[in-house]
Length: 223
Image (cartoon, rainbow, N blue to C red):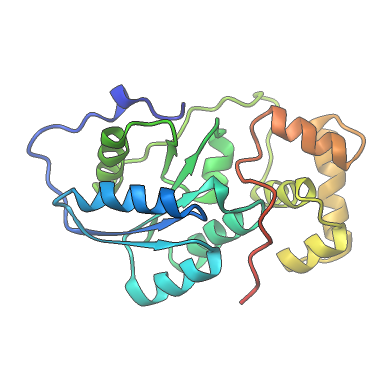
């Protein structure tokens, strides 16, 4: 578990400015549950929800949240694309990621996430962790991948697209790269992961916990 309930205790009397939170999760029950938890807190001014990356971008532009909590259920490419869009266009917004499994520190850093929360956390621990994020703390996991494995942000981007079953041409179009450049990244991934093909790369990445996102949702559109 990325964050244990014991690791998110908040000192009594700690105050933070009223926060607007956006929850991005395709599961409506999860949306409602998290919204209910956050609205119980006096430091939360508003909580918005979105089920897709496109809707999230619309809400972000209109409602200007302070924190965006993105679920790993969002999809293999839509989730990372939304994280990178926020990192590049709205760097003042804090991004937190909620996952059902282990999240490597390198992946969290590449996504620009200041916090990684587990779906197994009790509601009180989730609320306490988000309050710490609002106060400017970082709650990210320690490095758990092999010390010799160093993947760049772009390599992780390409890896997610490979695992999602996209071709080099499709990946290139989504990431705004040339097919030749994507092929070079793919070759580098094969070498670093010690695999021979895309299927082995996806399997190895899953074993290492490098694939945070589900692989059923469509990619985030360029708009």
